[in-house]
Length: 332
Image 1 (cartoon, rainbow, N blue to C red):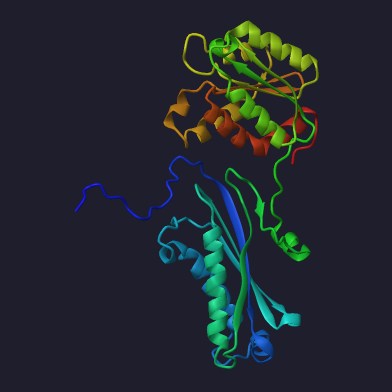
Image 2 (image 1 turned 90 degrees about the vertical axis):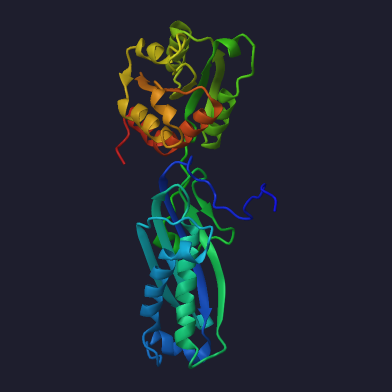
């Protein structure tokens, strides 16, 4: 037998993912027919109240998702909510399962497992009076959280579903005047191509920001400080700097921002280090800095493309609110 053997299946490795709030809602229907339907909604089935039992079964199904599906990660569910509603025009019972957790991976399989368990229970309790039952339309309604944010099924949601579950819209920076500065002696001399700056530009544009400047500067205090002053004077609201936050002798981005005499935003800098540490323990060596210079927020982020992208993902939920506060807007 060959010693070079690999498993045919494996669980996804999520160790380097960041813990974020996750939520998913799944939906499906039992087409009960004209005989079973009134007995279900009037709670007169021979085996008992199918609607109550379906909700209980849905809770259990969501919690047992990882036991039912071998490659599904076991998750500490913080919310499981099952809701059943009658649909008279189709003689159907529509079932939703909502699941939420703070985890490194999503909860869509838990929501789908909950819907399936609830529908199968409705089927089981209804089959003595009507064997011609049908389970239909099981799908993920939406999921939110993690790197990709909100995803909604192409079939969409009706108005009542949207009101009930209120999926969180994608975070936006529509129209915010922004700039990206890369700090690197070698990149500024043309020894290698800057990759972090373009990643931040693309990320800001995806959030709707108006990126009015993108430059590569040499390391050091004065080049960065002078450019940040000019951007603040020009009415730029947000400036993302990448590079110069390490422990090397030319890593001086934090000192450049401090020299401007702005207001430190210590909490955001600490948040970046703490959340980045979920990806790599070396994040604690970062000297990431955040300051407010006039009406502009300035972030000194790590220089690697991956770290820069991860930091923007971490900041995205807060940037719009932070910019509104700088402009004197209300707290949300």
